[in-house]
Amino acid sequence: MNKQQQTALNMAKFIKSQSLTLLEKLDSLDADAQAAMCEKLHELAEELQNSIQTRFESESGTGE
Image (cartoon, rainbow, N blue to C red):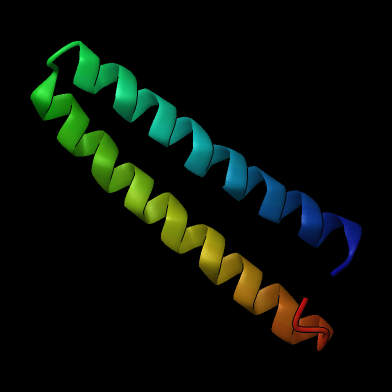
């Protein structure tokens, strides 16, 4: 994986992490509608991270 690809993957990991943190905050504030939206966001962020990782690993042929 080259540097730009690693940066993109790191950004996706960050978004996933931050969406989970936001979800926890919204849950503690009893903001149910917003928490539901954030949960969808977190699921999409996780899917995006996995997709990016799979693509870049297959392109580099390393499987790391």
